[in-house]
Image 1 (cartoon, rainbow, N blue to C red):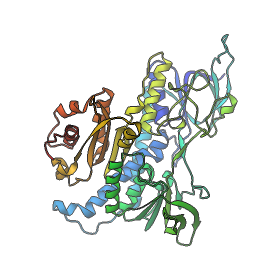
Image 2: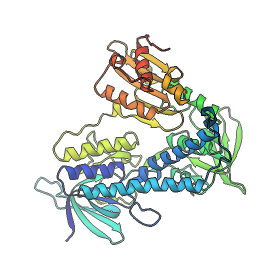
Image 3: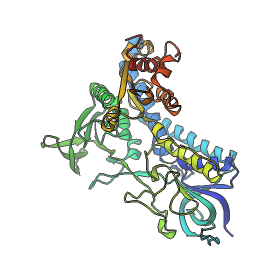
Image 4: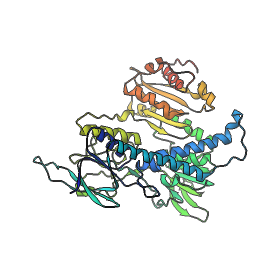
Length: 482
């Protein structure tokens, strides 16, 4: 007889493992199925984010930032170094250790919360017999692992994530043509590195290898840099990246990618129609991600997918099937780990009869480059397109005392507020620790605060957060330090 559960979660990434933990906390007998494994074949919970995404990329960004500071900024502090070099193998080893610590942490949390873990690939077998109302009593799920077995669950939460989108005619080999996976495992610093797409993953990985000595060229199809970012912030970031040595070509059309004796040859056409070729040692392709339903066997139960292959859900993350839910990258909305986590908690609480809540308008975005870029809410171009009257206020980090002490004065904080009510509509930051500073804006917007509210709150001195206060003051044209 197969094991039976109240809730079965398929996928152990940020959406999946958080859904399982919250469901268990709410008293449900919960199982989570995940097939990810490390190089030794052991379970590696955490999905793309922990294994080949958010966590390892931040580890490498930290290492490469230390290297760049040692080579270019330590002297300003009176610190002298000789024979500076990078041990890439040791850097990658540290990254792997950080990843394993996170993997093991999730396993510990499962034990703590009494979540039953199955290591393998989960897929639908069939819906259980229907009740008198015609609804299924549950679902049979196959776990294809070391030993195949079938389990049953009343509620199913799908959190199967996403996969990188390949460039047509240039499949990932993870040796020369790299997705985020291969970009995190380059064994030595490439002399030349190409990036197709100026997305978050590409820019972060490009930043890592540029700091370590690579000559990096970005080929972006869009005519603008970071089109989803507030235009003023994107231009400031682009200026900083170019100053650092990043070569950025916009409005290009990428053609054939050929292997050569030295690496790769990338044919492309510029925005002006000129035919060019980029010769690189390695190529990172970062042109988006696609929902992952591989092996899920949705047809067995009639699970509805859209034209992109994403699982169709309503505002509450319900699918077309009773008691089947889906969260994270495999459904609509931004492909962000923290968005998946919020949906996961909300779904577990809805199953329990509570009122789980996710506000997509206050989901923050972060790009962990240097300078960091973070934002929440609407951009200035979105407000203009909507015809909404607004006020804007900016404050540069070059006028912030803590930023001067850090030696990092690039960028600014920007506030956008309703012209009549002063309600904060968007906050955009490019500069040091933008990823941390954005949280104040998220809280403020959740409580529908005004720019004046932030302007009236005491901020510690000296701190980078004072730039947030000053930008709020700038909405009313009364900054104190600029």
